[in-house]
Amino acid sequence: MTSTTPTRVRPNAGTKGVARADREAQIVEVACKAFGERGYANTSVADVAEAAGISKPLIYNYFGSKEGLHAVCVEHAAATLWAEFERSSHTDTVGLARAVLTLDGMFRALAPQPWIWRLVFDPTAPDEGASHDAFQAYEQKLFTLGEDGVSELMRLAGNDDHDDTSAMHAVWESVFRSLVNWWLDHPEVSPEEMTARCVRMFSTAFGPIEGFADPAGTRA
Image (cartoon, rainbow, N blue to C red; front, side, top):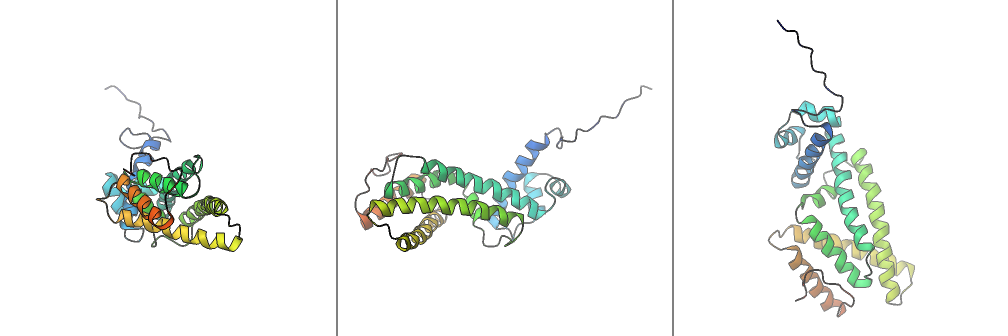
């Protein structure tokens, strides 16, 4: 008989020949969708394992717990949203034009993965722990970015009052989230159609939006 030497498994190996990093990415992708569509409270490790076609022990081995997996998902989802907010902030648009451009970018970024938004702003998520900390860190960054945009809008209108700006920022945060949530509740509406709706609404309330670089003819 010919003796054989047992094959050693590399510490960073995944399962069935899949590298660990690739397997983790697959699990996170599946888990983000599950948490985003069902909510943290209604999603179990078993749900994610079944959707990913893997075993529960593998998830525990990689992420430690449901909370650990959720924290990685929140980090991933929040980073995706942050990247789009940051991209919009680096354009040359100002005032209402920048507000519309930011909304348009968010609609387009979420179109292939709408569950990302629900995951980040999930009311059933833990109010403490790693995922909460991840959310808080990005929320503060988003708050600061939004505050800068609103301050710019107010200055352009000739209003430098601190409390007025603070109140307007609260209004904008509510309007922005409400518009995204409305759109997510109406999946038949395309990103382009939703941007056009925002342009019509803002124009009705505030007059023509100067400087809006329409990305896809949405005002036609």
